Length: 385
Ligand SMILES: [Zn+2]
Image 1 (tube, rainbow, N blue to C red):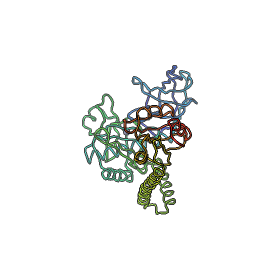
Image 2 (image 1 turned 180 degrees about the vertical axis):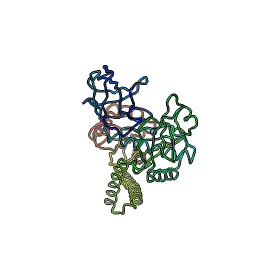
Image 3 (image 1 turned 30 degrees about the vertical axis):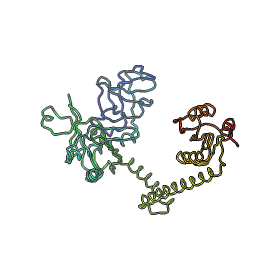
Image 4 (image 1 turned 90 degrees about the vertical axis):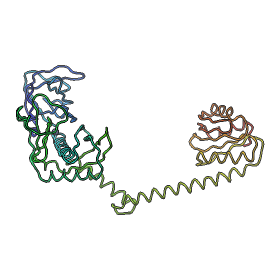
């Protein structure tokens, strides 16, 4: 069995060990060591990364109780090699993992909720609780968690005897067998966990609970802490400063300013639509009454306007009436008036690469054609230019 250095001292970032086994695995090699500080993937936390015997450690997994390090080239069995962890990543995970214990312990103590999931990956950290929380409750948990950070209390890991364990009160995601490692945050929490944690809560730095969603009858909360939370804050600050400069308002007023902008945009949209309808009506009114098919091509007409144009045209003309709007070779259409609408629609879709349909009174859809191709199609049907 490989000695788990990370279980007893999470701060060891380089170590030497003897290669006990090495065999080809997928595109590379699987290596088993006499001892390791590389934490294998488990409990929702990704495996440690780093270098082993000069080779990049791509992954570390526990298979049938043995820890395997996956590298790209073989290492000689019986030889001592040096392992070096990617410490920034590992330390960040220790901070996030300890923060997760604190947050879950508060949710458990205050609301009786259990931690039922945890994900500590390369990009994102989430924790799942089996009960729903409001933003206000999450904010209160966040405040309390940061008080635990500020109190800088000790975090220790122990493997108690069976008797000690029987008398201990601790949180656990599942029923445990064999040796149980208990992680205690002094005066705050005791939880069964095999992952590396920080030694004092002050090392975590800021704990920030970000978005949360309802998830499987509870909540999934996104969490950031320490440097990652600071980097996130820096980015968000820069973004809000940029928005405030562009909108010429104070940073704390950007939401109101954006609301105003959206309202303005919506009313401009309505005004534009009304103006486009007036133009459409005027264009339809210029068409002389005829018994030939007629068509109009307009700019920025929505389907409702297209329908309005076709209805306007069919009041004055006795044949087929069509209206188009679009650009770059894609035009929406509405086809109506009198005639075999279904047959003409099918014919047009075939000729102009179109899609769509309707009933015997009106059809709608889109064609992939130029204005000239649309005009040519209607000339064929007998329309004037
Ligand atoms: Zn843990």
